[in-house]
Structures are given as structure tokens and as C-alpha cells.
Image 1 (tube, rainbow, N blue to C red):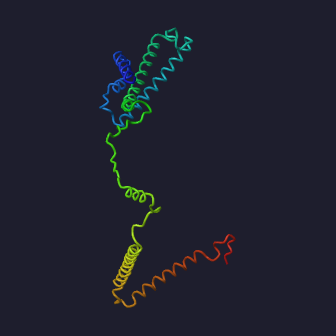
Image 2 (image 1 turned 90 degrees about the vertical axis):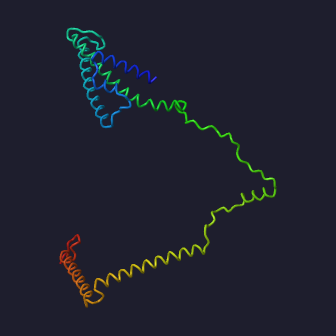
Image 3 (image 1 turned 180 degrees about the vertical axis):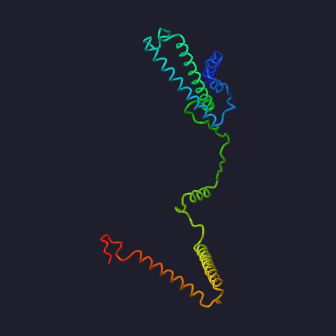
Length: 248
């Protein structure tokens, strides 16, 4: 089971730590209490550092195996020769053990995350099982017995002969009253806007005390508008937009 695998992984890591062939960061990750889990950023940094370290070990192992194959003819033939001495054999074994400890640290982290899910699945009865449904109620349903046959017939008629569409919730007169009230609200709002606009115009021109001021303002606006139009015609002469450029 997964718990037995965790025991074996931790036992292997403890032996490698005792022999001094495991990296201290991998041992620290294996011995960490699940309740003292790292935050997301620290966990990411730890995984990146382990990946880089494992990649270097894999390259070293591949190089030593290739050299061993070139010297001895078989990379899985344990032993040393003239071109592959005892120190290189020892270095290869230590690299393989260190790589295995790093993989064990990764597997232990994944297994500890899967254990709660497996416990939940086992509580439901195994893979593919739905959650247990509550037992059916032992109480008997409430039943009303109608002894009068005429009353029973009337109830059946009320249940069968029903309106096929949803009945209105108000009468036509009530709906008309609501529409009239909404119309009066709109008219009042419109009158309020017009009155505010009239007050604003009156306040702007001092209630007519400035004789000719409004007319002068309108005349000034018209003058600027005509001036802008003349400038636009000077910048865009007649026919300038035609492809043949027939400008007179």
C-alpha cells in the first residue's frame, strides 16, 4: 500500500543519510512534518533546486555509464578496469544513490498529498463508488382518507379540469392604473427638466437685465462657426478628394 511505500522510502533515506550519500535538502524535505508544510513560493524554489541538482546528477551518471561502456563493453558490468578505476566506480554508485534519494523525496511529497484523497475514496467504498446515501425514513407518509364519494369526485375534477395557461395576476383596470401612474411620473420629470433648464437660462442672462446679451452670444457662436467652415473650405478646396485631382 501507499503507507507501506512511505515507510520504505523513509527507511531508504535514513540509511543513505547515515552513510552520508544523500543531499541535506532532500533529507530535510523527507523529514519535514506534513503540518509544517512550506508556502507556495518556498515549495516552488525547493522543487526548482531539486530539479537542477537531479539534472546535474543525471548528466554525471550518463557520462560515467558511457565511459564504463567504452572501457568494459557493458555499462551494467559492475567492476573496474584500467580505464575505469575504483574511484570512478564508487563515484557512479554514490551518484545513483543520491539521485534515488532525490526521487524518493519527490515521491513522498506526492504520496502525502494523495493519502487524504485515498482515505476519502475508501470511506465511500472504493473507486467509482458514489457517496453513501442516508437511509430511507421509517416514518409512514401522511394519508388523508376521504370517505365521502362526492367530495372525492369534486377534488378529482378540480385537479383535472384546470386552466392550460397561467392566469393573470391583475385585472385590466389595475394594469391601466399602473400605466397611467407611470405616464404621470414621466410627464412630471419632463416638466421638471424643462423648468430647471428655463431657470438656468434665466440665471445665465440675469433674467433679461442684460439687453441683447443672449443675441450677442448667439451671433458670436454663429460667427465662429462660419469662420471654422471657411477655414475648412480653404484647407479642402473643391474637387480635392477626387482621384483625378480635377482642382480648378
